[in-house]
Length: 266
Image (cartoon, helix red, strand yellow):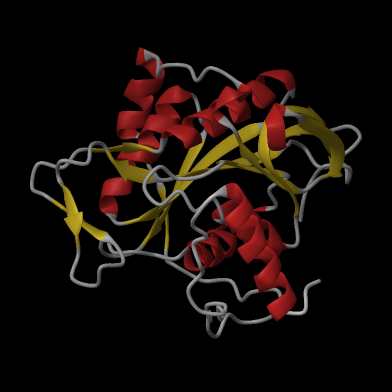
């Protein structure tokens, strides 16, 4: 349960971070052709979009007295480096949801694991990058919100959190470079765009603390989805191959009219 607006002591913010491979030269498709394998010299780092989420969480903490920032990542032991980078930037606490292997994990599976780890901690705000660089699916944030029953805004380019009112005002990017603004009641999930801030570099004192910090290791517990179960994805049936119109503009126009009449569209 969120502590905002209930007389709780502080605001609790969770940042979702993901480990991605740095560089395509060490990546190749796996046997399933659904995901990739990494070569022996692969280098991993934090998803860059998540760096903006960490930075925004730290900026909220600077504005809100007593706020806490937790960083969470799902994956094998190697993802602890990503969590420690978030601690090096200034996060207060790291959470590792431990799963084996680097194989593909669907957004729904990841969201259920994240929700399972976050449910009992009463986060007021959950921040994530707008998408991951490796799969570019951009679904985890919204699925976490749906599973936990939180409100959600995606592609956020500006936020102003008001813990006293228990709400956050956001602006999100929409088509043609425009923005739309609205207010969400907390608790909420925001996925943030890269233009929202300039992420800070880890500072030495934080890096030293992060190196020896004890991370909270959570056994994977997938929270049951709020409603419904994905059974099967069926591609839409098509009406067969299209027809390329050839000839002069007048001939193309004439043929187009014939097609429209043949299909009773005129």
